Amino acid sequence: MLHLSDLISPWEAPVVDVDVLIAGAGPVGLTAAAELCRREISCRVVDRLPGRLPYARAVGVQPRTLEIWDRMGMIREAMEAAVPMRGQLTYVNGEERARIDLDLPPEIPYRFAALPQYETERLLEDLLRRWGGHVGRGTELVSFEQDLGEVRAVLRAPSGGREEVTARYLLGCDGAHSAVRKGLGLSFEGGALPEEYMLGDVEVDWDLPAGYGVRSTHVVDGRTDDLLVCIPLPGDRRYRMSMRTPPELSGAGGAGADGVAHGLSGEKGPLPGIEHIQAVLGRLSPRPTTASSLRWSSVFRISHRIVDRYGAGRVFLAGDAAHIHPPTGAQGMNTGIQDAFNLAWKLAAAVRGHAGPRLLESYDAERRPVGEEVVARTLRHARTGVGGEAEAPATLLLREAQLLLGYRDSPVVGPGGGARDGPAPGDRAPDCGGLLYALGAFPVRLFTLLRERDHTLLLYADDEDRAAAFDEIASLARHAGHGMLNSCAVLGSGVRAPALRIPAVHDGAGEFRRVYGARGGEAFLVRPDGHLGLRTAPADGPELSAHLAVLLGT
Image (cartoon, rainbow, N blue to C red; front, top):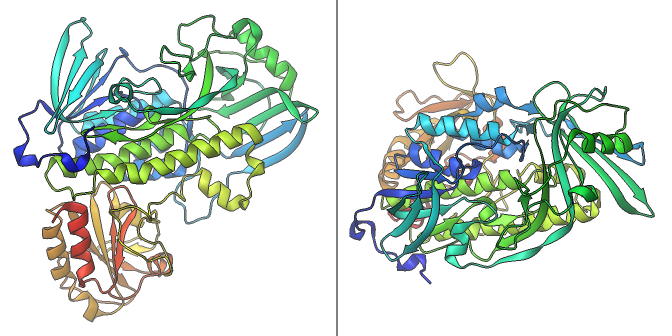
């Protein structure tokens, strides 16, 4: 089995057809492709399906995913297409038991949202086209092999003909039944839940508050024997509903030839009709209601599995190809998008020949623990409910929003920092407001400064003497970062530095200093994926150059 340390250097690599071949054009593959194309890395995306499926499969969009879309430059389109997910109403045996409001702290820039998966894919594919990429539809990855210098893949074209493609790297975003995972021979340990479910995209005429999901159960002797879960979708009282499968539809969902029982039934048997959904609503709806306008329906099964490694040699896995789990809390697609976002900038650095010795290895080191935690947590919630968690409700909500995920143990983040105020290396870099450009009539957010940028070095000064050195520090850092690093000075209120050549903003309300626990002369390196890679003081000390050597091989 190949290891990343065995790979030859870029200038020894043979000529290839494409830098990165991506199998799978769902939200995960499209995220990786858009980020690679934005960095001018050639990539080819193929998907065996002839077009996007018109199904509202994954519908929950977490605040952390919206932050990622902000960095990618598609937040406006997402905000216009999605609807707010304000909370959940819970009913047991017809009685309302709890009302959960998804209220996040005011410093979090985005809230929970709902968006059909086909719309997520449309937005990402539009973004990919903006950067010059496209999806090869109806094209299937048949097989591949790799050596020290390249991956050689065989594709089946829509005509049935075969094509061999050579790439520097292969990324498998091809779902629970991943051909890439099977080709690597990796284990996919776990199991399947015994229940089968059916999904339906319908409209109802009840008067429940808009933006709230509904969870209604029938419980006998502490055991749930009937279930209805409704997630709001764009439209008037439109919901994606899931419920237990009736006996006449049982056996239609999800199991593939590989024995992994996960996903939609597709064409494998009878599909639920409006009468099946209406029957469950008749038993469990908190209000008398009639379902109509059935857009699509399916039967599906749920498994919980995770791969033993997120890659081998020049081949990597992301999303459902690496981890599958119950849909509780809408963690799956969002986790996969974060996988792809984490990996894309690292692959881009490797293609350019500027990846440190452990940069690609850090993908598994950072993301597999996240996958393991998500699989365990969603399985626990599926079996015992979210209310059984020992965490405080506010902390649990931040975790469900995927805002607490971090990489403090990563081999490519700076040391320490946990005892200081503010984020430590590896933590999500938080947003803050109140930043003022000299030419601006109104304040901007930190995330606006970071949008569509790679590594960003934030240099904080609370007096003019500290700020005077920032241009030289930024120049040295940009050189050490092979041009893949931007710098910005954040100046305390009242600090004048008119001679600075690098961009500068004033921390007018002191929000940056408070949120980051910033000290005068301190530097914060924000990675392309929005996590803090390093914080160090003084900014002109040796720690920054040493960190860039580990990260980017300088």
